[in-house]
Length: 401
Image (cartoon, rainbow, N blue to C red):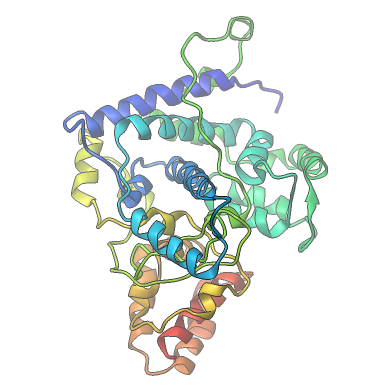
């Protein structure tokens, strides 16, 4: 616990590994681009992919926040709905070239190592964000972007009083004490380093602060400045426009703008291929360039807003006016799907698809809801998953309306 780790060394390693991976992927095709699902599978280290997505959401919400004018009412329901549809359509055309993607990847690699070497900073930057206050619910929602040490951070959030605004300094102080008391519960740094070392040699000693490095900071340039996505759940729903879900597979993707405005609007779209794969599935075989594996698995384009956006638990304008859907498969947005797979089906993509396909064959809402609340809840041990279960039940209401 007394070891000192160098943030500069993390950043340098992130730059080198990002350059290597981008050489593999973009080398044969310099003008190639990545879409949302490809980003989620770009490296075999899931935490890195999630942090790239988190940064993209920060950029996304920033773009939405700039769409304001003193001459027009951007808060009008019809304007917000139209804006949501526009952003959802745009999100189906995600194009990340190497120049834009490599700095995001380098920062995600550095931040992933930071979770293991500096949990205090990781909590402050990746979960809390820039807001002066936050609720336990907001912090819990931001856990979706953590894969490393998720249980450790969740254990702390569970000690916070729910439903109340918490002060930044007070919570950070409490986390520091929690970390000192539970330091042994951390995932071993050696395990994280070993995963990275399979891609580009790395040891724990390579990350440690030395007298020389402390006195003379490394000369390698720092990664391009990147916006860190805020922790609160609302952030994921774009600036408060009326988006309910941004489908990757739903009808018109629904996007939620960043302002604190009414909530989201859901629309249907074509269901793209699954975006989640297990670590074993996404691992890059020895000798096979990363770009070849991605090209072979590349799924249909899906709106990134769906992958990134989180929905507010309260009933939104979009939910009130949500149209009837013919099938759950087409109604579930990429963002919802990402959330359901992670939170309800233990990250198992195929089990999620099997359950949704079965729900689409059931005759009525009563039978379908019983299957969700009894059969699936028992099979997967759904405890404290009410928010996600309720979202699934609302989709069933739309299907059988």
